[in-house]
Length: 466
Image (cartoon, rainbow, N blue to C red; front, side, top):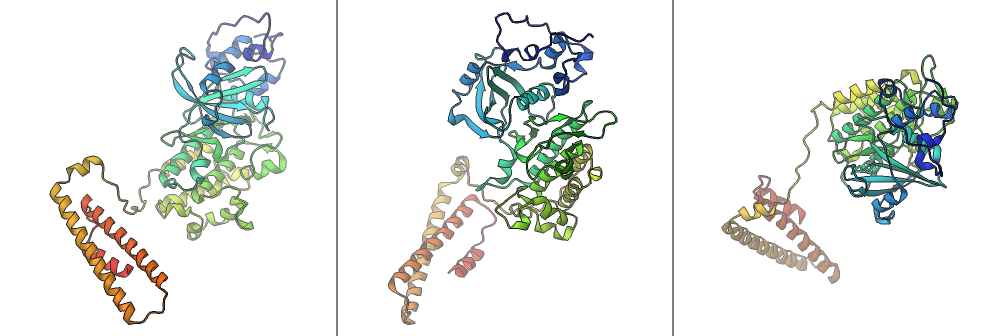
């Protein structure tokens, strides 16, 4: 195939340019030769590239080209109420693509990423997302639906991920902690995504693997996002590529930071950091902790190889509800991934096999009893006679409570207690409220028919409480 002398960016991204006499849109003709060859950033940067216009069109034919007006409608003019988050690329908004907006496209919620022209990333990172995610399709890579390139505006349209990113789910406060098996499922899914990238005919180095770039759907299936820093890996006899050091503090491999030599094993190190975050419930870098604990890898890695010290670093919010054998093997895997020697780290395909075997372990301790409030249907099933009986029991219990308080007050008076009157009233009032809470829980247990209720146990607990 002869090189095209008139190759310009207009052929690849016609929506980015305006011309009075635009080139006619080329016909898409799929061929085995084209579909087996992935377009890379290096191909586009080479002016003597042998790729034709038809080849370039085929490489991104499965992406929709949106107008700025369409995406404004989808996000309600980028309303603040639709704001999802913000990163180095720019802001992300939730939107909805309807059949009326784009005929032929399934109606669905979407995430619209808007490039910040004054941000740390620019057109090159935007283009990398289009090139990589426009061609790479995998269950554990986020699906890029389309893009907008209109004048200076650069936008990307992704599938909407209901549970946001791993960083938010793992470190958010005032919420239930992620269960052990859910953490392993997320780690295994992310590992599959990296293994797919490294196993491509033209390997892809993700370069910015971190918790905030792992998105989660409603079932906690992990998908890699944000390919702005991704790059093509070494091919043939090359062992590495030399590039400018880019990434996020706390996740980058030490050899990459020191030399700029980038390999697929750099991604393996970053994966080890995220796996360590899943085990410990701590951030890779936390300036609020004591000095020796601020860098997670430096603090925790020496403890990973000692099973007797593993309890010291496991996330306390798990409350011991995890597989002991699984935690040990996951810690050993993280230790290998975080090796200072890149050749000692496992491949991502090995990581996937190890994590999948951990998901099959069933030695997780049984958790504590959780009381479930009866539904309306269950309440209706309770007979009126049972309700009346429970009410009488509560009345008797409350009478006993008042008698006990009167007896206690008399004893205190006989002993000539020196406490002031205000303190006595406060103490009796708090005690009364607490006792009623205990009796109220008792009534709920008895109404729901749970076997945990025991009158003797309850009376002893009440006596200890008083």
